[in-house]
Image (tube, rainbow, N blue to C red; front, side):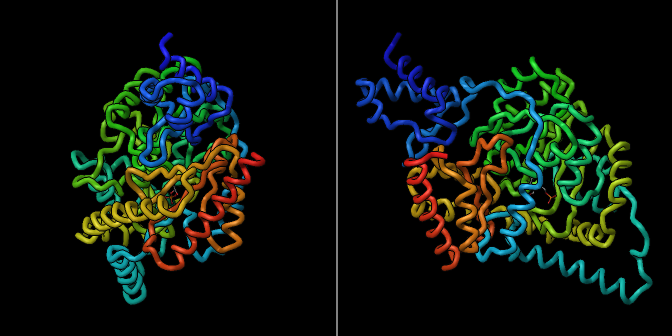
Length: 474
Ligand SMILES: Cc1ncc(COP(=O)(O)O)c(C=O)c1O
C-alpha cells in the first residue's frame, strides 16, 4: 500500500472513531507529517483524494475541515422526530429581547421596494374606507388570479413560466410545505431531508407523525445524489423535501447536474419532491435562477415559496405550485385556513405587476451579495481561527461550525443575556448533530457600532466555549 493510501485510511479511521467529526479541522499537513513521519507530498496527495471523496474541504487560511462523512458514518436511516416546540420556545423570546438580531432569518427592511409595497397596501386600505368595501367576504382558495399570474411569470425561471392554474396562495411557505406533506404522505411515511435542515420543516414532519431520513449535505453542493440512490435501494421514501437554492442554513446552490440526476431518480423510484424555494429569488443572476420544478418533465415536483425572504415575513404570503396534487391541496387549504387575506394578496399582486418588483429583486440581490463579502471579512477578522465560517453562495445566512464538543446552545444562552440573538445549530438536526454550530443572519449588517461590538462579544464567547470544550467536551 502506498504511503498516501495509508494516510487516507488513518484519517478515515479517525472519522469513524469519532475523533474527527463534521466541522472539525483535520490535522495540518505539517502536523500529519510529524505524527506519521511521512513526506509533505504524500499528505497533500491523501488530502486531495479525501477532498474529492467529499470527506474534507480545503478553506483558505483555515486548512482542511471535515465535511460530511458519507462513507464511514453509519448510513442514515428513518427515525421519528422529537423536537417539540423547541424552536418556538428558544427563538421567539430571544428574538424579542434582542438588541442586535443575528438570529431569525428576517430580511432587511430598508428597501425602496418594500416601501412601494406598503404604499400599495395603504392605497388599497384607503380605498376600502372611502368606496364601497371590496374585502367584506371570505376569500376562497386557490387565491387572487393576478397574484397567481405574477408568481407564475416571475418566481420560477427566466426561461419558462409556471401554469398559474396550478398555484395556490398560502399563509407563507410554511403552510405550503405542510399542505404538500399532508397531501402526499400518511402517518409513518418516510420523508428525506437535507442535513442540516431548516427546523420548521423538521417540526412539521414531527407534527404529522412522519419519519425522517437526514441526508448529510455539504456546504458546497448539498446532498450527494449517489448517497440518496443507495438509500432508495433500502428504504421506501415517499417524499424528498429539499431547499436546493440558497439553502438555509448552508447557503449552497445545488449544482444543476445533481438536480437533473435527482429528478431522474424521482421518475425511477416514483417519489415526489417538495422544493422549498423561499430564498431562490435572492440568487444574483440576470434571469431568475431555474427551479427544480422548471426542469421537471413528469410532474414530480411541488414548488413551495413565498414573499417572506424578499419582502416581509409578516404579510404571510406564500404559495405552492401543486401540479397533479392541485385539487387535494386546494381542498386541504380550504379546510385548514380557508384563504389568505384578500387585501394583502391584492397588494402583493399589484406590487409584483409593477416595475417596483423587478427593481426590488435586483436591489436585494446586489445588497445581500455585497453584505455577504463584508460580513465574511469581518467574521474572519474577529472570530477565532477554529471557527469554520461557511459563507453562502447566495442569501443572507452564515453557518459557523465550531470544533466538536462545543455547544451552540450555550453560546446562544450567553449571547441572549447580552441581548444578542443567534440561532443555535442544535435545531437543525434531530440528534444534536449540529450542536457545535450556530447560524448568523447578516441581512441588516451595516457595521454599526452596536453590531460590531456584538460580533466582538460573540467572538469572545466562541473563544471561551472552544477553550471549555477542549478541557471538558460536552
Ligand atoms: C428554508 C425555509 N423554508 C420555509 C420557511 C418558512 O417561510 P414562510 O415565512 O414563507 O412561511 C423558512 C423561514 O425561515 C425557511 O427558512
